[in-house]
Length: 323
Image 1 (spheres, one colour):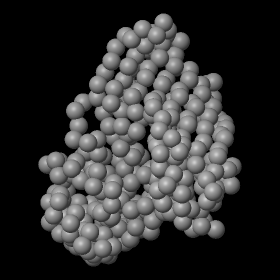
Image 2 (image 1 turned 90 degrees about the vertical axis):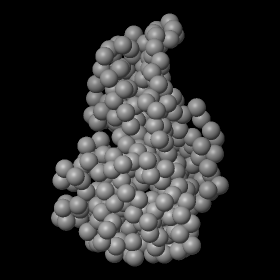
Image 3 (image 1 turned 180 degrees about the vertical axis):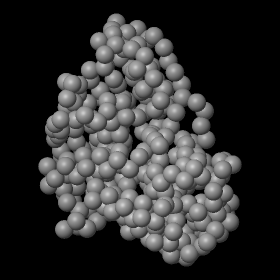
Image 4 (image 1 turned 180 degrees about the horizontal axis):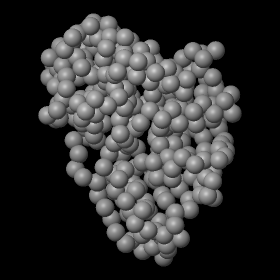
């Protein structure tokens, strides 16, 4: 599968080693708005071609799959451009600004028979199944409460504080907390409560989100751009609790009983950098003629976007592109 990258920024540099390591992926091309930046990236990671515009890369007939790694404020336009050029797409989180944009992208992809998926890596990692298998085994009894937090000191980063770049904690890091809850507590949410503290620019700087489930379970999520948190995810049951080390890239899973005694620890399989799983699945799904990922189907992306839309509406956070 010959891949092209739109955007040669930080996330692409993190992802590139996984692409180089995958036998099913051929590093075909990279594009940046600055040709010199694309050329430097191509030399460093062994990409065959470098382009100084996104349109030039998308006009390359060899490129079969495009990884969209631009700011999420630009995801919608760039994905639509990819689809217009007949390219399959895997796009960084947050997938779009809002749910309607996501629906429009998926509709355009279906009409053209092209694959589109959200590249939220935790959905594709083997840790997801490891966690769920432990919960399903009953080792902690009946799960009742889930807590998860993710916070980094990133308030000074432009893409975080700038409304024009769809800034704020929610779309950048809150998306991981929401996905963690949906993966392991499911979708039957009947009520959402939240509290927010906004940055001076009007976007959300930190928040707590509580998801209430029909069967009485609760998921409590905390995100902030002002501090570094322990990034833990914990599922509490009537026979014990399960601790996930770093919900943004799980490293281990520990199981404790009700007396806080460690019953077991499970380390995740050795990985290149964690990004390989989403691209391996993309190559497989495209080869099988599928239009969406098994691990992150379109309906799940839309559900997450709708949750974030409702939260932003309750906070009064609106991006300039939506006005």
